[in-house]
Length: 346
Ligand SMILES: [Zn+2]
Ligand SMILES: [Zn+2]
Image 1 (tube, rainbow, N blue to C red):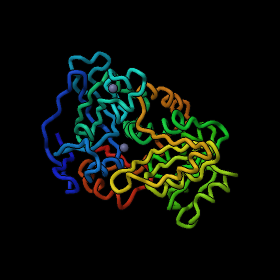
Image 2: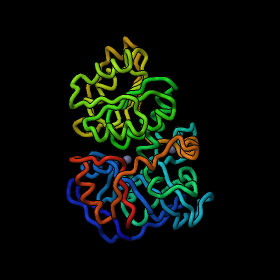
Image 3: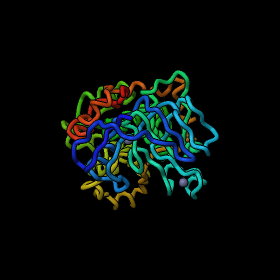
Image 4: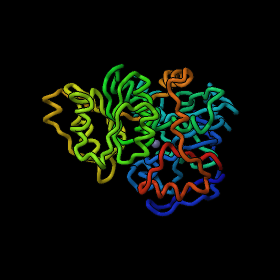
């Protein structure tokens, strides 16, 4: 099969012919029909993820058709249209049996702990626990865009932040995660303030439901601006970018007893950000992480998509071929395109 492969961190990946994967005993092989371009893939390529063993094939936001099934799989068959959360739980450890597959102790992550979906085929372990059937009318590109950023945002807004109608929600960073969170929080009846450095992303944020925007290039005092718009501070604030500045601002612009959720990854030099801990104590702030979403929680999200309240297809950005993927991966830190980019030609 064709796959994007790199042999050393930070060295140019290339499209190669590599052996086709075989299904694990409890897993499947999926013929990849679409796979998202995510900044986590860039982090992996840079060597920021200790799970990656070289040589490596990136890619973790995917949708496709089941092409082969392991002997122990009971729920899936060849030809099924599926997607998968980027964290696939083992289904057996304490976290999985308590319903928290997103923090499984033995988690399988295509594109990190194993070869990923920048390829014609990808193997996925623990299929019965983690595969999600696609609605017949959902396009593969839309389904692929759900697997990492959209579901992590859904869990952040709905399950981790417990966002309620009428609450103020500040979203710092309007990339794929931030735009997803804006759409989801607006659908939950919250009032969203979007923060970013560029007007084109803030324009899209407004189209997706944000009621106010802050351009941090023109507004140096972001925290004060959010507090003014929200009349005292946001109830919920999300760092959707993953940077010491956005993390600090997100916690600092909360009102008393506000909830911060960290969704953007903090890796490498950014792994130890400053936290205004005195304020966390005095104002009883909550700080939580959000890491993927369990496959069983997709049902609630899919019902909101079916009802037309969430329209993830509106977040799709450019579509490229596998041959264009190495250049796109390497350029990801310099320039983040508007919306979620997808590889849909192999
Ligand atoms: Zn991702
Ligand atoms: Zn587990």
